[in-house]
Length: 87
Image (cartoon, rainbow, N blue to C red):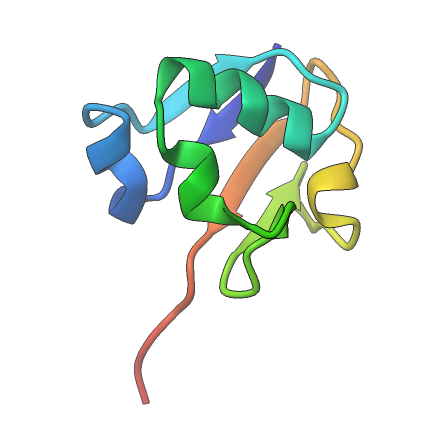
């Protein structure tokens, strides 16, 4: 199972859980599996069946270029990176 790190801003949807494991061959499949356990998580990260433009995803420390279609392995670590503010 892949390990998914939940950003602090979305932990309200996971009851405070900061990491979760899920099965899937792609980032999208992981999100589908997690959304069963944490309803609303997918909707917070996806718009129009694509990764929301304000969200980046990293798989095994590499920023994913394929969005929801990005392949993952059972040993993968997946991080969703929310937008950064500041100036």
